Length: 519
Image (cartoon, rainbow, N blue to C red; front, side):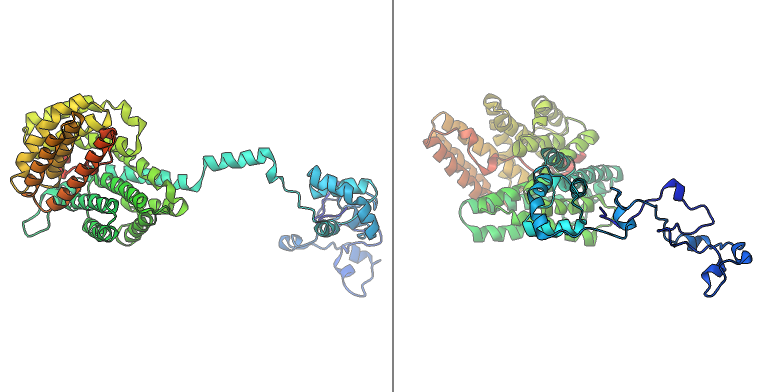
């Protein structure tokens, strides 16, 4: 039965260079000479038959292909064509008699239409594919579709797991992150932009990033306190801090970028934004700025554009994207700076805090922190801001990271004493005042563990008095510290584990300053 108009060529009928068209029926012959093609020419002329027609090669390609001679009753597809498309017309009753048989072949056995036509022809029921499709449509037969087959479904699942589109963009983002960190180290341009500036110029851009971190932390606190209008105002200040860092280049810039983006996801959860509209808007805005300001081969441009693509495909996978980006940064920084550098250690601490990364467990951070702290105290001195920040990170990791409360008790009093001296000078800087606030929270928790609530109140009262003499961010930190005190006391009265209380100053720092990296 004919289902297609394409015709095959047998070796015996192949084009031999003289005849252009094979005969379709015995009564017709293709003209072989120019005179035979002319009207009124003598077909019996010898001179005419002795001049074969030679067409150019381009015209030969336009000639119809030869048609094989097949019997009218042949079972091949060309049989009906050779027989002049002699297809038997069946009545409606005959189609109804074949309905159950066709249903079994086409629906139950899931045979393709071509096979159904061949099997029906063997029974003496010949019809074209168009007739079958017309009757199948009127009967409501579903087209044979093998995608429901278990093997086919398994293949689709494997294909999705292997190469979903978001994984392609995720891999590209990770590679762009590595390129960015390595390029900044190789160029060394960030050193000059970070340390050489006049008094009339703006301070280094790391200050804007620290300010952004404090603003974001304060916004999360306001949202938890059911103050959405104030939280939105603080978010505007947060985005304003980020605007000043557009031309900023530094190897650790992406560390803060990934961590602050993850905090915005937490802020969406606090606000009940299940669609993550806030972080999606930020990512889309950053991608738009990157398209305008950054060159095509700039790694940071690729990072932002790939992140934007991931947010469009699957916004809920942004958290995993931020994790992979920070993990790539951590590996590159450790490769360039060494395993005991404060920036490298802090990056691994953040990976453990926000994503419970199992890789961190293999890094032996406690041993590396002890070595880094000893080197910093020997070279810079115990009261240097970098040493205090390193002591803050180490104490936090012991208390919240691995649950070593005894080790944290030994260090937290020293941290509170050293950071408190700088805070009371009036110009502590955001990192030092935060280290002092963390030490206050840790000492208050230890006092509550010993059921000494009066001592806890005294610790916080002294801390509030010291922070009141601090710098620009002291009012924010005082408000956050008071909220942490109330949350701790509620947990203590309800007999809950204090170390698991959701406190603002229980979070690790996001970024280090350039001086910490440069040292």
